[in-house]
Image (cartoon, rainbow over all chains, first blue to last red; front, side):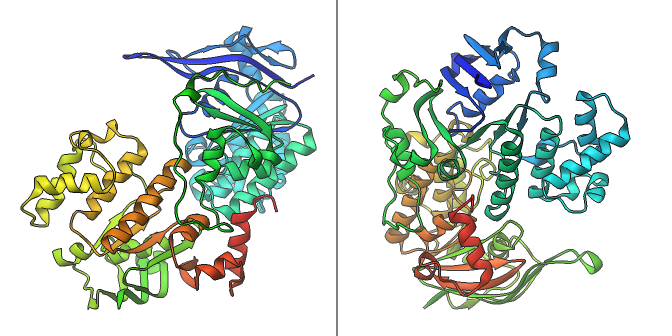
Length: 284
Length: 250
């Protein structure tokens, strides 16, 4: 069975000029794999991730035929039941650690809180697990980091702490929304490797949301390419460079490349038809 | 002819015990009409160099020469007629309550131009924005359009040198391609000299002929673009940076 099946997902926001449809009928499934979702800003990729966790607040509306987590439809759950899903079954790493860690709580308290919310244990065990987890994300000197506040951490450290916090309840699915965009390339690789190892070791499913095509081609197993709230193409990540949809091709060609210099970069010419083409199914 | 020479530039923040040396003895030269790139990780001091050159950081020492003339700590209008800067975030660098017309005409007025109306139209045309954009406010523009306005503002005093601080890192790749093409066209058309800071090595590889690599405030290497493409830099750190940017999972 798949970990997650999403069918006909819509996300809408009412605006003064009518209903804005951020996600328009997207279907896909996730097994124990690394699934990439790529697209430009405004393509609906982050909204898709948030909608799975039902994190979209009114007046935003989420509709779906089903969002099945191992056969249980999340759409029919109460808000209270949803709270047990978030974190312990599905968790999410956001883009910028600066905005997602609590600035007035020590790193240790935040990680331990995440653990104790989902496990009935004492502080001592929570602390031991927190240290173990920080070491799993290659933070040396975990004892000191536990006592530190987020502003004392660099961006790469902060993001690793976020990953530790999200992994500590041992979820089945991790949604990572641009987890490395705020980081330098050299740190980026390190954070990705850590995430990859955790996902592989625990047999988790990973949804990796990014605007960076090369990164996704390198890191994921399967890729959904989104445009204007729909999936325009689904392909194996290692075959992303053979993608056929003109939008995907356009994105690939607009990237400057060190190994293939050219005088002018290709500007993407958008075909209005792309908006109206039906969404490609990413179901398995 | 050197458009910009920087010799033994030191930049620091704070005093005494809290002093941080952000740039240490940086030396580089940029020929007129050339495009020079500076790469490095965040905190390596690459943006600080640009900010010191353009006069946004007063605590520097060393020699900066622009167009053959020494730059003093206090810069006059003549300096800004020669050197202009484009910033990273087009969402933050435009005044939210000033229309495109106000942004451009204010700059033109400050530099003592008379034919402001014609020049505003010319500038918009230069950066590929039609006349319909003239009376719009920043919130009515996309990221790419805002960056075009920021570029138009930088071009207003007819400078010879443009300092570009990560001009496309806040933009989507397809928009990045348009802005990079525009910058290259403008450089050819107006015979501009570029100094471009970026963390993206392939962007610098596309735009520049020479690249300096910064680490912890020091310029560890200056290499030409062929060396970079051939992946044969001298310094170990440059090699590491190149490999990291080409291959994430390695």
